Image (cartoon, rainbow, N blue to C red; front, top):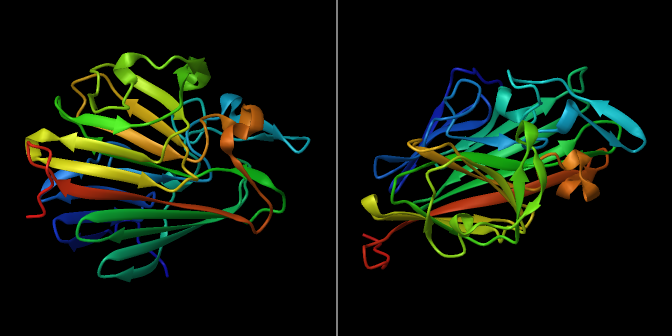
Length: 297
């Protein structure tokens, strides 16, 4: 089923409306009761509010890695010097299926001089009255085993009183080239084990041992969002530009940035030809009164 890159689809259920584009297999906007919750702030044209990370997320040091006795080289895919977020977010996906509350997209990439990866990716965007679920699957179409990873890159609405709560085990420092350069103590201002307002400074860190759950709360609109991720997503990347930026990125990933060059591949999964890696995340929306009670009305 072919797809025009200029086409887009909108799904509405209950209080939620989501718009999906074949460009990057991305969500252009997710709104709750008319208020945008996922904001168009990223992607190649800055129009994406969430995009899939496949066949890996974040950056690779030196645009190369050694695996299986070979050295593999990738070419930069943006204006940045390091290859970024794999290929899925820059390609046009094909419509694979559509219902009243779901969109399915496919992407096939052949191996080229720019990347050693050949793969097929499948994404499903499913909307219920109070929940958006995103599923991503990648299959190795190459002739050799390679390390693969998946993830999602959402841009959440950010307000001065928005709070985040989540549990992680460790935090990586941001080093040269925005790459992780070692573990560090989690500072109190980034300890989100209890609800905490996002500090108004630059944040670009990977958090390991992610519990798979996070909650965002916007008191101004009495909304909470519960993010629930399958166990494959055990890394949370948090990216927040310095205030007054109006978004924050909470990126569930199956591996650490630059995992290709880290011990144990940083959580990347080695896929033999024909093998696949898959995972689903869910965003559940709750109307929360100032008392903290849920209101289904």
